Image (cartoon, rainbow, N blue to C red):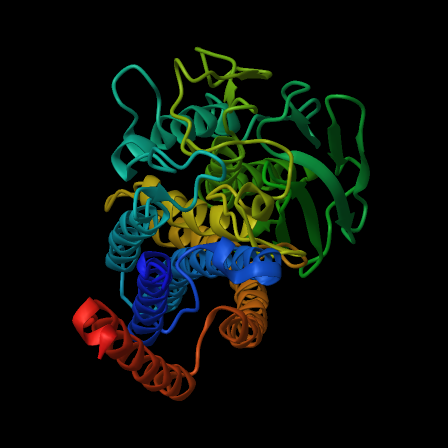
Amino acid sequence: MTISSINGTSAAMIQSLLSLRSQLDDLTRQLSTGQKSDTFAGLGSQRGVSVSLRSQLSAISGFENTAANVNTRINVANTALSSMGDIVTNLKAAIAQSTNVSGINGASQTQSTATYSLDGVLGLLNTKAGDRYLFGGKVTDQPSVESSDHILNGDGTRAGLVQLISERKQADLGASGLGRLAITNLTLSSVDIAEDAVSPFGFKLASVTSNLTNAVVTGPTGSPADLAINLGSGNPNPGENLTVRFTLPDGSSSSVTLTATTDSPPGPNQFTIGATPTDTTNSLTAALTSSIQTMAGTSLTAASAVQASNEFFNADANHPPLRVDGPPFDSATGLVNGSSANTVIWYTGDADSDPARSTATAQVDTSMTVNYGMRASEQGLRSIVQSAATLAAVSISTTDPNGVALSQELNTRVSGQLSGPPGTQTLQDIQTDLASAQISISSAKTRHQQQNSTLQEYLQQIEGVSNEEVGAQILTLQTRLQASMQVTSMMYQTSLVNYLQ
């Protein structure tokens, strides 16, 4: 009788046990991890879909991280812009209240408020979010603006706004203090008002209106312009007047109106009708000289400061500031370009011609990019800095008889600039742009949440397992494994004696 070997059968059964054990280990792993496989290969034909889904989820995660960073920067910027708005409001209130303070103290208080306001605005324009300066356009690794001390007073080798205003004032007022005008009597009965040179400085004769009886008024004509008033035909009547209008350096206008009177001495803005046209001419000449000199110390000085400030703050890395071609300054006839070597450049960020918002961009979705860059040199921001700096830079002496009037002239011009000239960008326009960017980010975030939920669910269907199903498979497998092990054990206990029995 032949007895066949059980070695082959035993080996097969052992292999089967190992296979069942491997399956049990895999099911146990699935139960503990919730994943069908720890490799993409284990997903079979669905592995390509899984890789694609994970790629989309990773992209969404990247977009969300970018959006969160941008949102933080915009929130920080909005806080700074809101604080600037508060500073503007406070400065406007100080300007309005200064007219209610008696004497020169009102001007002094306004200047102090402007100085503090300038410090505050410049500090806000140097705001950082993380390691990024927000108001320098593409230049994010250095402060966006100079300090208030440098802007006002320079740094030793470079001139600041105070010096530029002083130089411009000298050029606009001239040596005589008459705004670069010459007032002369070409004849005994005529008054001549003439610009002293063809230049951008001082008063510019615009027009004249007269109802003076017997007066012959000609001009202004010529270059430089000249205006003549001839009383040779006889005296005017009381109550008749003469008005001369001027254009000022900042583009504004002012005028002198003189009224004929029989009073002697005449009152403010009056001239006395004398016994002869010559006497009347002398009184008219003195009144014109006095009124124009007063106007030079008030409206012209204020306009000069504003224009010097315009030329200082319109400058950046690509556009040099304009300065009076001097010394001497009181007889200068032109402007020259300053440089970064001799003049403080207040804005230190980039000065490219592209829109400010485009200097910082972020992709927050596959097809959506938001722009949130800012430059301190934008009109809506520059006007605030310039207005505060102009008020802070013009020192009004307590002994100046024109001090109060000069302060009021400055206040009138600056208060109009604080919110920007009509039709130009304002602080609120910048805030609106940033709000639009945040709305776009919020919309993208909502889409990401929806997409993420859908993709995660789909990925779970491919990679995930049902704990109930895996648990049932484990119980079934354990039963099979137990039975197989019992059979295998019985096989190993088999002997020839048992077989013969």
